[in-house]
Length: 347
Ligand SMILES: NC(=O)c1ccc[n+]([C@@H]2O[C@H](COP(=O)([O-])OP(=O)(O)OC[C@H]3O[C@@H](n4cnc5c(N)ncnc54)[C@H](O)[C@@H]3O)[C@@H](O)[C@H]2O)c1
Ligand SMILES: CC(C)[C@H](C(=O)O)[C@@H](O)C(=O)O
Ligand SMILES: [Mg+2]
Image 1 (cartoon, rainbow, N blue to C red):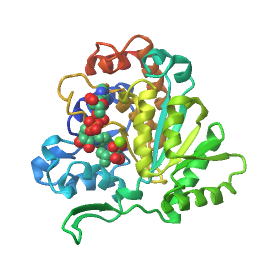
Image 2 (image 1 turned 180 degrees about the vertical axis):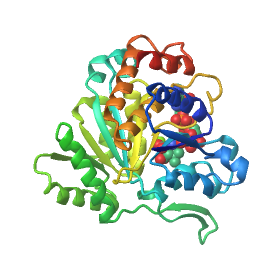
Image 3 (image 1 turned 60 degrees about the vertical axis):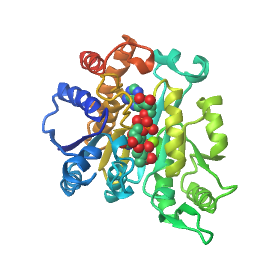
């Protein structure tokens, strides 16, 4: 089994190092790793954020463990050369359309949430974000209007096939959990969302055991902090899912805790923390590696057929947290490597 390791920029290498240590400690037979450049480091080395050799490795691999991309030095580059294009390109080129972003409160962290403990302790939800469409991948450009103003535009669209395939993933996920699916859209304003809602309702006919509800995205953002315990599975588009998942991360204590899987529906997956390259803390040993460690657990579960090993990592993270393994993001003092040590010791 080949795992592509793509550490990327900023805190990416620091957090991938810790995830790799945890994987190594499991001594899984037959697991091999190959590393490649991605993001700003790839642009600086070879002139492109997603070099052909990296894309080729990602295609050959059974799974991809990804750190983060993004570098302030690159923010003025033409868009197609910016580091972020690497992650967008991998998702699109590999057809990784289903993004699973689970948020569950670790009991040991109830005090770390910005929500009151009795509100936060009820959080056990899964955000399913569509990852290959929406305003992210529509036509976009800058142009000049007739009266000489600069104008930027980005076309938002979904076709029904794109919505239906993510709907099936979401309904099946809800079936395997508590049977409740909340579809989040903006159907009161957007045609894209009206189609989204119509297709969700049509697909529901195949899943009579799942209770489907709908919520506008503005209300969903409010409900996530008012009463997050009401959610089981949330399914939403690319942009809304991006925003709501960062919000959900803070509800469970830190953005440094939320893992994700980007799946193609056929077993291949890219696994990454939901956060970015955090240039403000890069290279200082302050990054929380747990989102990446938990992403490695998702990789073992969803792509490598090793659910018991995944459970082992997740249990070790819970034990490490119970033992006080907290970095600055959770009000503690441990470094990135010390948190890694604590997880390895708890395996
Ligand atoms: N998938 C990705 O690679 C990805 C995701 C999001 C943002 N980005 C990129 O990352 C760069 C920075 O973006 P941003 O600042 O908006 O978001 P960010 O997620 O990198 O950081 C937001 C805040 O959270 C903190 N933070 C993030 N991860 C943390 C961790 N593991 N431990 C402790 N604190 C953590 C950061 O220090 C920062 O204060 C940008 O270039 C952006 O495009 C990349
Ligand atoms: C870096 C960016 C392109 C990316 C996104 O918007 O999908 C990030 O925010 C994420 O959540 O993975
Ligand atoms: Mg994001």
